[in-house]
Image (cartoon, rainbow, N blue to C red; front, side):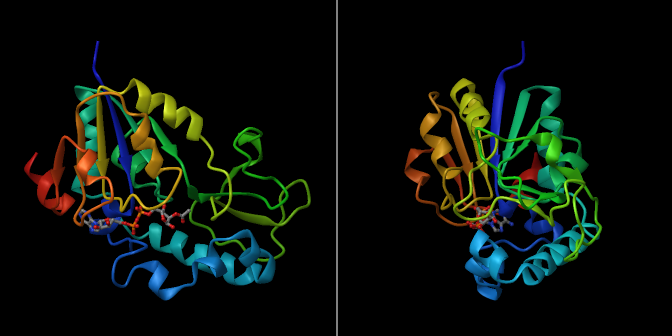
Length: 228
Ligand code: OAD
């Protein structure tokens, strides 16, 4: 039986594909106010601005490709039982060939009616629609008549799949954490559920959890994965 490898990924994994991170210099949160584009209050205040922000991200996603890190993680499925827990809202893990992926913060290529909440205990996948790389405008309605909104987890909203993610981390033989600043919860807190002694952390910059890792690499993922 293959050993269980759980991988928690963040924006750093997609940097070398050309997708901006959130907290680095020139990251998205330097250019936009989180509360304007990633909160329910921002959505109620100016839904057109929020739609435009995610339309731009979605259109850009159509132009980028998975990089060495995404492909290396997909390749690991040959030898390991791999589960990807990603905070990323791009679809680059699936495009690289990974088959078991939980999008903890939603997915850019999906939308749902604004009156359907992302309640972790009352989450209905049936209300989520794939729209690929299309734009969504004010007035674009779901079959239930409600305005469509991005299927993205905004600050203060519940995280779908968090309970499944906890179960996977608890069962993991190896926990690999890559390309995340580990500053956003509950995703960062997943580390606390790992019970093994093979926690590997690869991130360009330091994180608050470096001391918890059995192995830490402060390097660029492209450098590490292209050598694997
Ligand atoms: P951050 O932007 O907070 O952190 C990205 C991390 O990637 C940084 O710590 C960098 O050191 C690292 N990094 C950048 N380039 C790298 C490279 N080439 N190789 C290796 N590491 C590199 O992104 P996340 O931790 O993913 O949530 O952010 C978590 C959540 O905060 C996001 O999912 C998003 C955001 O607000 C929502 O929008 C809901």
